[in-house]
Each structure stands twice: as C-alpha cells, then as structure tokens.
Length: 454
Image (cartoon, rainbow, N blue to C red; front, side, top):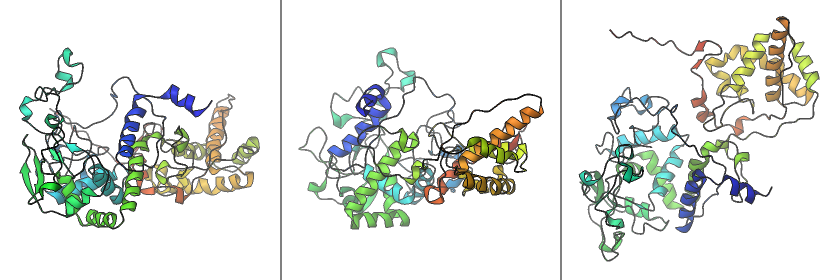
C-alpha cells in the first residue's frame, strides 16, 4: 500500500494539530526539520495519568516541591511547576518575577522532558520569535472553564464577550503583547529585542506580570494585530528574561546570535523532537517528510538477525548452568522498562547491558553481570543478538519450571531484535525508566512508611 493511502486512513486530529504547527513555522520562513504522521487519537480522558495531587488550578508550587529553592525536588513524575500549566509559570516562580529562579525551574522542567540546555534555549527563543500573548482586558470578564460552562458553550469555556471578533481583544494567559517587531516572521528579532534593550517589570491590562523595554523606538514596536496603524510595546515573560540572566542560557543565546543558521537548525530539530518524542522508533513515522537521519532520542536499534538456529541456542542456554530464576529474572528485567506512552524501553536493543540500566539496583548488577557473561558468548557464536538470547533465556527458564511441575509448554518466540550500542543510547534520559517497584518480583527500591490517620 502506498504511504499516501496509509496516511489517508490514519489521518487523525493528533497528527493534524502537530502538522498545523509545523506548517505555520514553514509559512513564516523556517525550514523545518521534517514531519511524521502516525499518532493516534483517544476518545476519553486518561484517568490513569497523574497530573499532581493539588485540588485547584495554579495552586502554589510548594505543593509539588519538597524545597521550592531546589527545583530537583519537584515531585516525580511531574515536570510542570503548577497544576494546569505545561512548563513553568511565565510570570515567575509562584507568579513573582525573578528570572534566575525561573531559569532554574525551566532547566529542571525541560530536563524531565529529555531536553538539554541548548535545546531548551532554542525552543524558548524560537518559540517566541513568532506570535504574541493575549491579555487585553480584565480577567473578571472572562467566562468559566469548560467543565463549568453551560451546554451552549459546547465544551469550549472561557468565553470572551468583549472580543468582538477582534484579535487585539483576545484573552488567554493574561500577559499581553508580542515579542518581536515582526511576529509573523521567523527571524532573529527575539534576540535583537531581548539583548538590544533594558527591561523593567510592568503589569499587563489583565494584571499579569510581564517585562517591557525601558526605551524603544516607535518603529521597532510590533503593530496591533487588528489595527496596523497602532503600535504597542513588545513584551518578555520571566522565562524569556531567564535566557538573558542565566549564564548558561545566555551563552547559548550568544552562540545563536553569532550563527543564525545554526540557531534555525537547532530550533527546527528541537521542535521536531518536542512534537515527535512520544511516537517511539522512526519505523512508526509515516509520510514523505520523515527525516532519514536516526536521532539518538529515538532510541535507535539496528535490525537483528533472524537466520539462526533457535533450537540450538535454547539447548546451549539450557546446558549453561544458569538457574531458571537467573534466566527469567534477566529477561523480565530487560522487558519491564517498556513504556507504552512513548514506546521507550523494553527488551529490543538489550540496553540492560549498557549504562545506566546495568547499574540500576532493581536489575541486581552482580547477578546481571553473571548472566550476561554466559549469554553473550552464546549469542556471538550463534549469530543472534544478545537481546534475542536474553528473551530466549527467559523462555527456557519458564519452560523448565513448567516441566518440573509435570507439564510441557513451548513459549512462543519471534526473533529479530537488535543490539543497541552506547553511541545509540541517550543514557541520561533513561533514568526516568528506572523501576522503583516491581510487583512481579515483590521488590521496591526503598521502603515506604504509611502513617495511620486518627
């Protein structure tokens, strides 16, 4: 079947949302890195997703940090600083401006999304090179949230009776203004604006904290989105000011300003990563614009060999002296990291033999090293991948245990897994897959005490 037919049958809202954003960047002058179809839509709320324990939107950040001055104490597996936000508070920590404190939170939040400092700076600066914020008017005039709105709102909520069909009256965050002189062109205007002016804190028309230039030429101001004869001050959020104040982010900004083409490429790649990270291996992407380059964050795995004698390999494993427990445990540990939300982890790639997985407490490093020392030579001699042999070892252990109970069962097996290398593995980003408990093995990484409430 041609890919066009596959795309036609699989075009879903999730794909179209991301495609629309990518096309928007293309239309504004950015050469984007690529795009892949292949996402899926869901038709109900994900009730098993943990968004935090707060009972209200935008509750103070202290409710999800052990120590607000130490961003690393943000509760796992959360990344956003508040319930109801996707990144950090654009006004500052708990809505109080302070660019360096905001920078520290940005670094932790984006690190939990597997973004490094350069990618984070590129996404922030590139994302705010175009577009504007919306906060003209009083927040009290905005309607209630979708869940509380009446049926006539059709699930939309936050009605804005004062908008009157004019873009200038739009209301979302409460911060108001564009970042650059030309907010519909992808250029270097964000850097020119941020580093070419001194900034001070002001309140938006809606009462939100934002930063505006102390002085700026009239011709450098962005025009009103409805009336081009009117110009307004540009703005920066606290997160934008963090790019200037934080020495590490500032260094990357200087690098971008010195090489605009490098900035464009870095942002395009970071945007592609941001919008495709949860799709798993590149084999899941569809369409003519899928980049041919394997990217380390896609957890690439080379194709494995299928042309070997499976029965002979099983016989060698059975005669190796490894116990059923050793074989089953290693296979289980190799497979249990698989995460359905983004298809990371799992047995394919045999990354259990690489850092950081080989050193995880839950993988029992001493036992693991002993088992791998036996299985790896068997794999090499047979021409099979270590990933396949680990799984076959688990099958042998299960079959032997069943046989010892007086029954005979052959566990199904499909060959073809490959073996990843250290160079194919973004070790730092794998830390989020480390198990902290395992009901199958009746194990937990640390003891938890639950107090009884009287």
